[in-house]
Length: 498
Ligand code: RVP
Image (cartoon, rainbow, N blue to C red; front, side):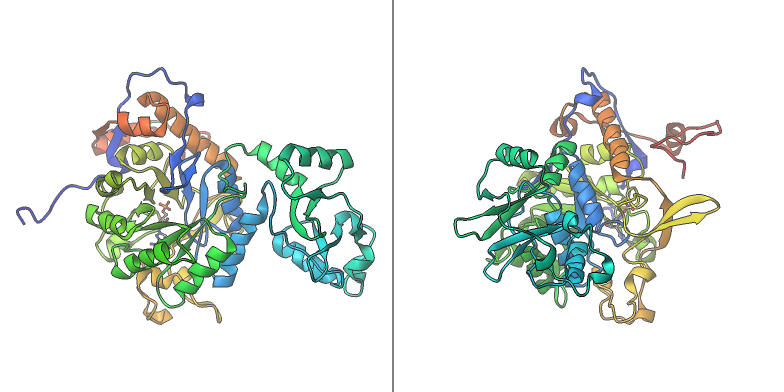
């Protein structure tokens, strides 16, 4: 090769967007973008598949805001599939396959079911799924918990006849029935009295509260989940698909691996799974993106080493600064019509627009979301300040097995065959400041993007991508970008110095 050093890699802090002629008002821009070939999202954000970022609570919150959460895979197959179910059942126009309980279950068993699915009551059905009644908080109000082991659902449920509706009832008619009878749940039954679905008042409230929510054809929230390609990975894939997952992320630290490409091809061609959207990654070169596109992915995820908790670039000496990596990947993905996801390395809201102009269609966030209420883990107090733990999936903590629970995170880094004391870590464990509810954090991030679009003069994401131009800056320019020569005396909601 003529030049063994190739090109210079640039990242977020190396560039700024040029301001342009504009008549755009920030509050009026449209941030809708393509997540995959077939799924659009109203805000270009994904929450990372990490065990300190995305479980069902975060996935629900992300989808409600108009983005999507990717459930991490450092869980047993059953636990991860259960997380998918929690998201899919969380809110919908109609639940087609509601959780039910039999009349002879004890109240303790009922309680456990309600806890597992986070619902406040269940339809009661016989062995043939015929509706017998319904049991909700109202029915349990006068039962003492000491009786839960001995009393059965049959004794306290509200029996038929109940207010029910036929399958296929219009949304407005259902809302009117709920209101007229002051009930919270409306079972849908067929002519034979068999339970076919359930509509709840909560779902109506939610859909008004979250107008941008990412939903599937049955108005259930959309969710993604990470899978690998070693060992029982195929079981994981099929179990997640059965649980209703919308997007699978074949997730590894080097997405240019042959096994990865085989897994993508298998999911896209197997009759049991080919309906699901597949994201492949991570890669950081044009060739890596091309290989994924050729294997048939529905989106390419970019990022080798940019993560705030990642040490790949120092441990292995491998990676590409993120803005250049996104650009390189887009050269292969764009002509094929495959969306690009920029994963990792974002520090501020301004980095979102930079990623989009470089060639991404959306971005995946870890550190920026790990401090939210909805991320797994408790608050930690340090010197009177509140933090939440945040760790890399290649950190010692994430890769070590705990008790009889093996780590599924190891094989993301091709180390499934190593014992705990042989692991080569590529990530660290740390903490980030507590940030409050995701809604507030995403408001600031997306609000920042609205401002970017105003400055560039773009009403839509495609316009931003077409109009955006970069200027490269020096370390003096970066210093000038941040607040300087002044002591900050109060915290801004979207800025902290690092
Ligand atoms: P960040 O948003 O900068 O915190 O980066 C999050 C991303 O970092 C994840 O989506 C993932 O691609 C990557 N990651 C996760 N764990 C590790 C690691 O331990 N090296 N890296």
